[in-house]
Amino acid sequence: MFNDQEKGHILSCKRKIKELVHIKGIQPMEGAIIAGGIFTSLLRGETYKDIDVFVLDNFQYVMTKNSIIQNNSMYLTKDNPNLVSVFLDDIQAVNTIFTKYTKREEVVNNFDFVHCCVSYDFDRLYISRKAYDCIMSRKLVANNKVIVNDYRRQKFLKRGFNEDIGI
Image (cartoon, rainbow, N blue to C red; front, side, top):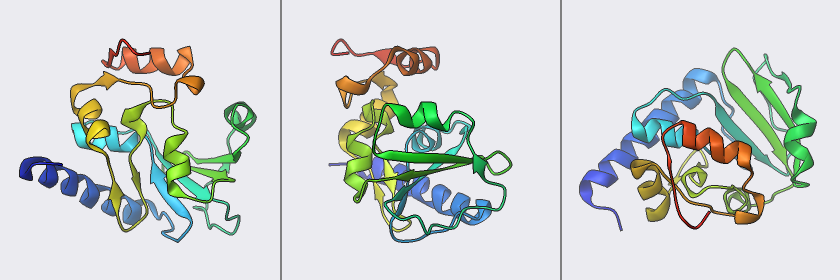
């Protein structure tokens, strides 16, 4: 599936995310995953904006001490009934997103674009061939066309992604 160079690249990304978990004081626990754009940034050697920690149907998750409910939490959760609330730690740049999802796969299956469909469960890094190729080639491919909105589409186009004809 991946050649040796790509495997090394992916393992390097896994080491970086493990280091960030430690540095940022993110609580590794069953029922929580890191997913989304951080992996695009890490794999491309770019500066990341924030880390999204998705809490799977577990409201006992311990957040960093600086976390406050995000002002636009209602906006972020209104289009997805499986998102409960979003907390942001501005100091550590960590978003904690409480969900009704019970499985890691449910989170990534509901992302809008393929390059966002990478996740880490504090043990294993999950990345598909398609996601890796989209990240490395900056190809904007819909994962779930129903939830693709123009704001997100424009955001990635401005960041240098090339639109796939299927969107």
